[in-house]
Length: 337
Picture 1 (cartoon, rainbow, N blue to C red):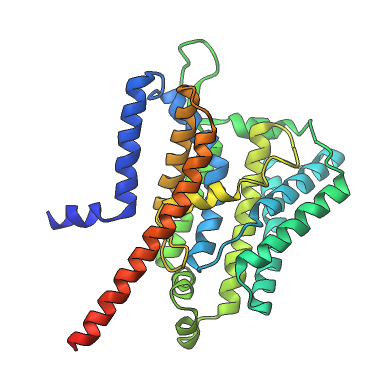
Picture 2 (picture 1 turned 180 degrees about the vertical axis):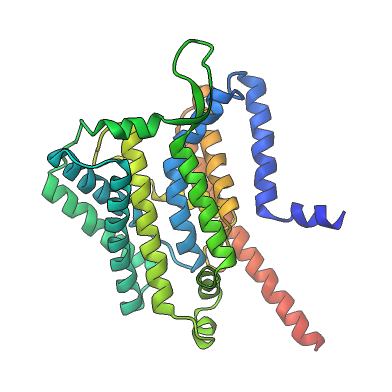
């Protein structure tokens, strides 16, 4: 009984229950919602957001916020696909590798500035977002790339666990891009839980001064985190291009708040030190279910923005109350002693 009560106190368990309840309610209203085809379609739709959220998670755990990851993704996407189209070379694996290299370098630049000038991450990344995004438009003049290599389309449409489509169309199955998101999530979860570097990320977010005193390299951890979000965002940018079959310089920048809201909804504390990968994945899936249900129920998409803002405000309030409770507990312990 005690184990069940402890589970119910966790944000991940609450999110899972909410997802189940909402799914049952929506499926009772729209029978097509709870079908294998729609479920895999919803998961594919939120894959890019899910990949981005993994990078945002590690930054938020350190007590910072990064809003430049979308600009990094936009620049990397354009640069890689432009080169591949122009020289008619490469494959999807090379595209992913090259994108990760470019994205990591741009992320390391952010990390260096944040550490060197000892500024909040959100201030630096607002500046670099404008810098990266502005340079992209100055150089490209906002030109679209409408024809991308065919292997991007194959990558996006490839499926596992496929079953025949009763309507006679393409087989229904879990998309490889969604599987890539799940594998990245599993790898990040193992990294954060079972490696010294992963635990260092939590310690820096909990108390940077104490972390420094016990020997944690703050500079190295900062570079790791921001280089990591740059590389992860780059992977998301390639998946995004494969999904929409084009490069449009205005389609990624602007999604920052939704990704941050999904991560915070998953239990990550904006003040740092807390957050799990599974909670983040559940947060992204809940956002995707709500977006899909609004479409199926023909409800205005503006309610999605209302939900996003409400989640951020609600999470800030919850985190503040949790910190206040912890401080009271610390005071009680000291008084008792």
